Length: 151
Image (cartoon, rainbow, N blue to C red; front, side, top):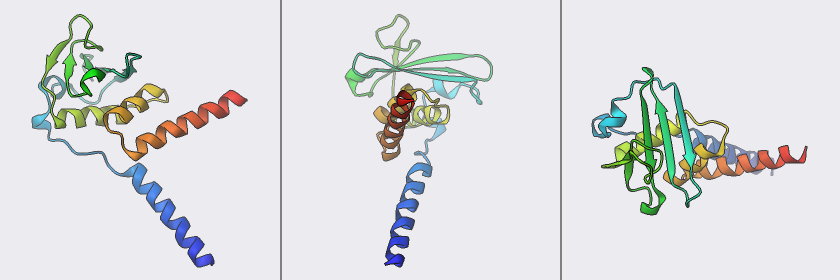
């Protein structure tokens, strides 16, 4: 009986570890959109906005040389379109550019590497990638928020 319990605990722990530490999908830098590819790492700041229009995502990236890139991924197109120059597709200065899988993977990687304790990064990752760890992250944040509100 102890052996089965120990095996079960190890299996669950292993699954959790693999789920949370499995690397994100790789991307080919040559296929990433030039606006994003031209930013100089390390990034000084990355902020994510999750809009109440149904879930459009706005991203601001400030690179090592203080260059700023504003990106919008509108929800009405299921995040299949990319706009640069503004954080929302309807904002002045938003210019649509081609979006491919490598660009989307690099964006999710940047968001993941620079996410804060705020819910916008977690919500954006859930919308863009939708992996188990993104769902778990949202649930954990909600649980922590619930615990903090009780104190």
